[in-house]
Length: 221
Image 1 (tube, rainbow, N blue to C red):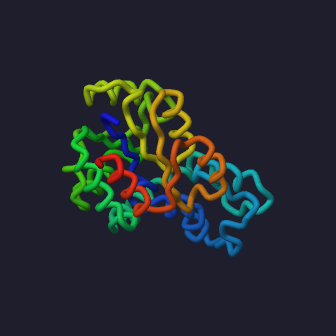
Image 2: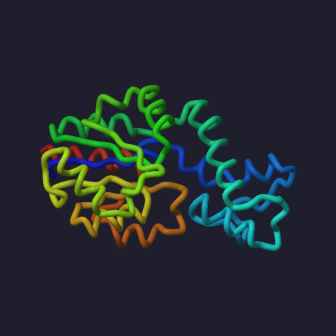
Image 3: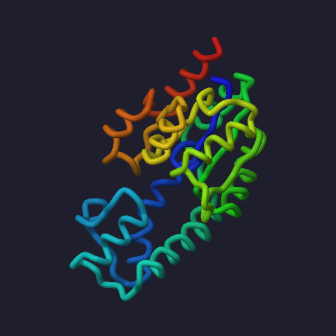
């Protein structure tokens, strides 16, 4: 392990649960609250998937296009959740301290819009942990592309295969494996339906930051 690439939402910050429930804020805004919650048949594993499913379902009671609904949800979470103070996952700061003690370069890649990403990092005093950070939001090269990880590894002066990727999202883990990286997964409520696939994809799976931190301490010893 010569470098570490971190995800933010769902890995370091406890924000994925807000993203996944965003559809319910939209329905409340439109005056059609949904009582079934995450048990609704159209509920998916991502905001975009859930919106598409809902708009195509017999339950749909809003007059919006997919683009309009998605824009509303993105605006809401950035102006409410992040502005109000996106919280760290329990034990995340101690995990970052343990990782920094390894003395290897670290960067952060997040699909969160850059302004919200920078605000969150500054507010939580997390910038100091990373050599650099990037928002992949609206970028051609994102976590679906091996090239993103190749470029970030090069910026840290290492080969991609020498990097550890710490993530909660399956699609990014799959890209990381294609790039030849070691992948560690941390559990998050948003991805409970994909847990077995995540376990099958990642090299190691952690239920919480206490377990992840212990693994990092073992690396140091």
